[in-house]
Image (cartoon, rainbow, N blue to C red; front, side, top):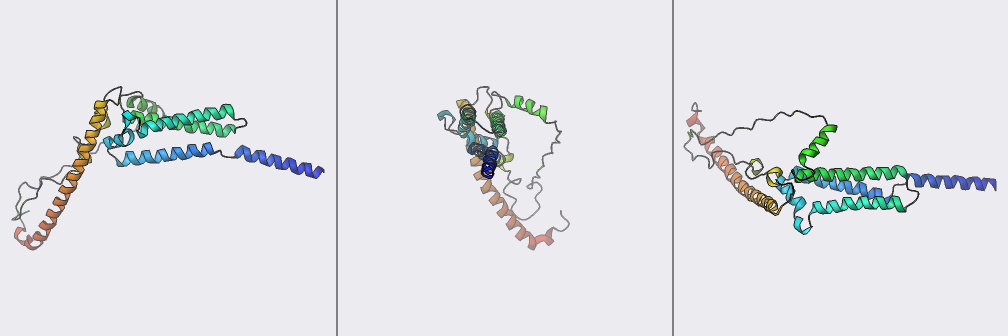
Length: 244
């Protein structure tokens, strides 16, 4: 009889231990949600130009259909669920509950930083966020790289072959500041986004897509030209030895 009671105590203690270290489905959801958000955010910010990034995140803003607005709803819902669990459920693992709160604060901080990046002059502004970040991160001096200077290949053309179709190699639209506008050139108001700013964002993206199509056509013409020139020059090189 004593042995049975002892075994029951051991089993109850083991069950309590398993419950104390069990990971709840809410924690798994928070980690999964945060990971999905981080992956999608990093992918869009790395691959897209700034106005394209804005289109991805705030398209449908005035109909409350944008990804950024639904992200705000999701972060707020996580905070509400966390508070409801703390109030209504007894015996929660205190360490896990604190970890959940840290995750929610992390999501809220990432959301605030993204908002400052999208709308540089709204609250919180990009300057305010950078000031807070600078408290925890030491400033690092970055050397600006001098832009490469393209040579005009049409100048002093000496070959008996039609000159190149363009004076220089076509420039990718990403490097064209007149097309690839920065977000602080699009969203300039403290109340961003305004309808006028939203229209400017859409125009920037449309101009960029058009420029990309034109660049793809121009670079094909450019490559085809030099392929033809190199084939011609292989048989006529002797005529120009010592001239260049």
